[in-house]
Image (cartoon, rainbow, N blue to C red; front, side, top):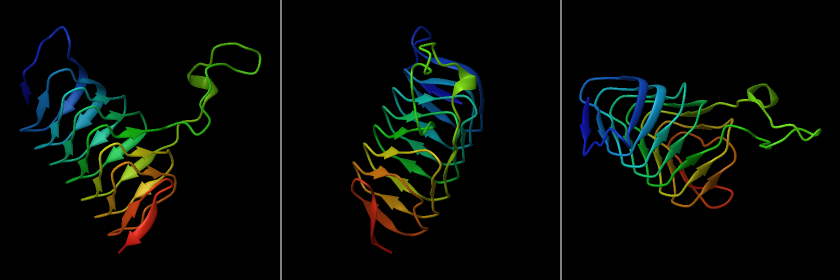
Length: 161
């Protein structure tokens, strides 16, 4: 693993399993996750517990990859991509008590081999983005994306196969 422009005070790599040739730029917060060989992680990225990133992926700056996300090999994640893992997020329960890990349901998301996710895309939980698919910049993905298709918009709709 090569950590580029690192400053220990600002970079948290806690229990991260990394493959050979991984490049991680400064100001990355990653914990209890896996990053496959040959992958690159840009500045200001957060990768949470349980996330799996395949080999030869490029994760661009300012992206948020939350618990429950699996990214297969050769995937491109553009700048400022946000994943969501809770369909009904709330700060408190009906009685006003702060929610804990027991008060919400983690929903998984899968990004298949060779997919490309454009900048500023939001991906809601529980979806699969198919192999070789392309999600256009600024899109909001609310349902599965078929392999080898192009989707754009809010909500994302197929425009090309």
